[in-house]
Structures are given as C-alpha cells and as structure tokens.
Image 1 (cartoon, rainbow, N blue to C red):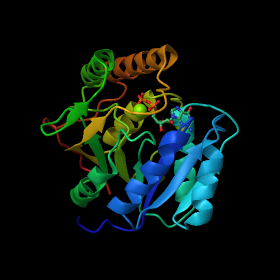
Image 2: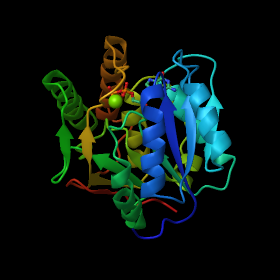
Image 3: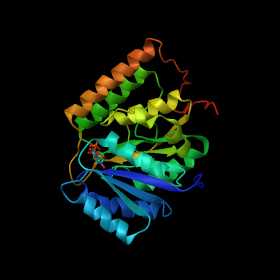
Image 4: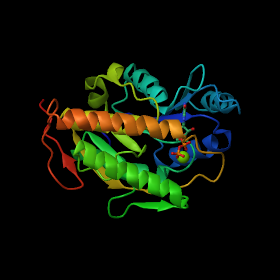
Length: 258
Ligand SMILES: Nc1nc2c(ncn2[C@@H]2O[C@H](COP(=O)(O)OP(=O)(O)O)[C@@H](O)[C@H]2O)c(=O)[nH]1
Ligand SMILES: [Mg+2]
C-alpha cells in the first residue's frame, strides 16, 4: 500500500449491527492498523452503540458518535464527516459495518488516492464482484446504477456503492449543509457533487459480499427517494442549468480548478 496523504479516519454508520461491528473493526485494524475508526450509531435498539463504546474504551483508535434515533444513512454520514473535519484526518473512508465491504480491500483504495481525490470501491468495473447477493438486490443495484449513469451523464459504473475514500479537501469544499439526501442516494449525491466540482473520481474494483448476520435497512422509501432525486438532478442537468464536461471511461479524471 502506498502511504496515504495523512491520517485516515474510517466512518462506519451503524443501525442494529451488534453482531457485525466487532469483527468489522478487528478486520479493519489488521488490514490498516494506523486507521482510526468513527462509529456513527443511531441509537440502535440492539445495543450496537454500547458495544461501540466498549470498543472505544479498549482502543484509542476507535471513537463513537451517538445520534438520537434512526435518521438515515445520509444524515449519519454527514454528521460523521462534520466530526472528521474537526480533527486532523486527511483521508476519510466510508465503510459499512456488516462485513460487505472487505477491510482487506482498503489498502488498494488508499493507494488509488495517489492520483485521485475520491476513490469509489466498485462492484461493476473489471475485477469487481458481488458475492451471495439475492438476485433482486443485484437487479436493483445494477438498475439504479444504469439509471443514474444515463440520467446524470457520468461514466461511473458504481455510483451507488458505499465503500469509498475522500481526501479531506473534497469534504471541506463540497457544501455538506446543502446535501438533503437521507437514504442511500446520498452516495449518488456525493459522487455527483464531487464530479461537478471538478474533483478526480476513480473507481477501483472491490468484492462485495452480502452480510451473514443481521438484516438490511434497504426499504422502498429509500428506493423512492433515490429515484426521485436522481430524476430531478438529471432533468436540471439536461435542461442546461448545470452542464459539466465529463471524460469517458470507467475512470473519471476531472480537472479540479485549484
Ligand atoms: N447510523 C445509521 N446507519 C445506518 C442507517 N441505515 C443503514 N445504516 C448502516 O449503513 C450500512 C449499510 O446498510 P445495509 O442495511 O447493510 O444496506 P445494504 O447493504 O444496502 O443492504 C450498515 O452499516 C447499516 O448499519 C441509519 O439510518 N443510520
Ligand atoms: Mg449491507
């Protein structure tokens, strides 16, 4: 792994992940020992927040942000990012707690940051894989990606994925207060904002493995929000209110203005 451009913070949103959090953190620490972890828990009824507190008490690299109730993945990440920007971390990672995002893939994502500002872990570029996902989830994911790609006109193969790495400057520059996405379309929103701001966005293959324990928080409300928002963004883009230039290919190399 090439040295990342500074200290790394991995933000892990949790809702009822008590059975998964311990092993996700342990795997992360053996894969990237220097990384710090911020668990963002939405008052999980199963006690994930208390487990996170125990992990934090036992290890300086782990900290916890407790939120008052379930308010969606987007809101949890936004709080996590704001917290990250109060510290010294130069690299901020998004990773699920359920084991779907293999911590063993993180060194490759961090290495790709050498010539990128945002690195997306991608299931749908050559070398990327999905393991054990029910067919309807894969159809939804591939359909969501195809629709987003066509609506927004971005050549990103996996814009909905939630395993990614940001340089601190990206989070500092993007207007996080203007991000209204609550559910999983938060991921599309952030990538779309980064591309429009001219940041270099790269995709790196990952293996995504369906969770073995606990249950998914995906819901029809989350799908509806994504469909609605992506359609609105695409329409305003096509109506010419918002027309960035995109190079083609799986790697989006924007020219950041600075
Ligand atoms: N803090 C917080 N975390 C959430 C929320 N919804 C989902 N998550 C977490 O986000 C990650 C991805 O959710 P998951 O249910 O596995 O989605 P799936 O992989 O698309 O089925 C997991 O770590 C969840 O615990 C939420 O409302 N708040
Ligand atoms: Mg999952």
